[in-house]
Length: 332
Image (cartoon, rainbow, N blue to C red; front, side, top):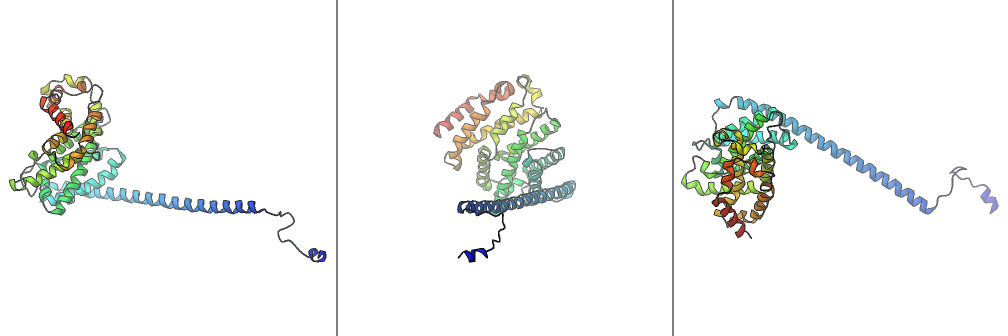
């Protein structure tokens, strides 16, 4: 037995030591964790690369679409415009590139301001046109596909207008351009969400148009649009108490007054819609609308000093207070 052991040679070397079972298990566990970490790191790197490539490609496409869109805009006066063409060639690419280049980054550059001003001027001309073929709102009473596209695009445009409102601050660089843009955007939203502002709607289509408008009003009052938060941010930028001291004649010529009046109109519009449609689908959201109206609007510091006197009188009008009371009482 001893003779056999003398001829055994250890291949581990003279310095190798026996490893215990626990140490071996720990070593195997560490190696497994190291391999898992390497796999996770590789997967994370691939994910980051995929996200970056998507971001880069999307931005490149947005730049290309903006270039093509601007070329179309330069020839706009020479083209035969229809509501369907407007939706496909003006609204659709505009919403894509303005989202990728501006709203997604919460930043409005001078070039985007110029593009948005041109866009809303065209849209205002369209929605106030008496020619049903050119009126963008005619899509709301068209085919099922046209109504679907119109509803989606209109909601996107309302959200864009609320973003513009939240960025409206005359103290920032290019403040006057922002104010002019916001004035156009607010005029557009007010007309879009008011059936009386739609031109060329026949009595036969009034019910369909009214349903489409109510749907937009409920969206405006929902959390998706960001209406009340945007109004609060805007009103907080108004000077106090200077705004309330301006005479009514000078205020009416000011874009600021138009913007402020439009925001108050939009803030109260869901309550008007709820009063005349108490059994409508939006009734469940009236608590949300009421809460946001109180939290975001009525709690603005020095609210009565920031708003023009004419608007304060309108907000205190008996019909508005009774409307607010009736809606909140019936929603309980």
